[in-house]
Length: 145
Image (cartoon, rainbow, N blue to C red; front, side, top):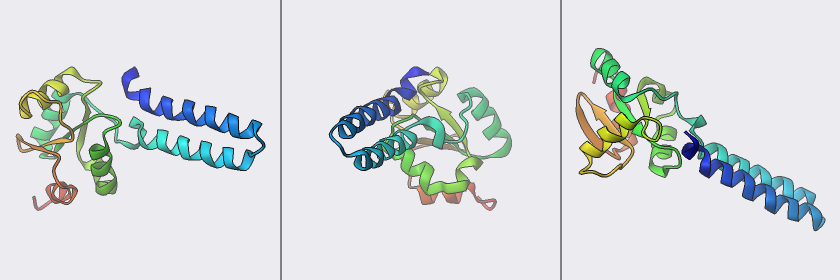
């Protein structure tokens, strides 16, 4: 769990250190703007922008019942972020599994990607797709899919 917060924490710490230096050099306005930028970067790279993760086994069980895709992801992954942002509100219609928090999820991703933990990996009707186009994933969320 701590690994998911390393990058956001580093963004906040680095931003704080740089902002402190700017305040002492007489530029409090620049310091505030820079700190805000680093806090925003931390937020975007944190697990907070993703829907609540569940375990891989629970996600697979739910997907079998409701037919919704399972999205395997990890914090800090720019492709996962792109998928999440491009799906918008539709992202909550999928079952999200953080592979850094769930060993079974990491194992599922490795088995689908020749031993690599390549994310996002989206499983639709039991078929894995690695780093699919967000528009395609959105189509899989529609009721007619």
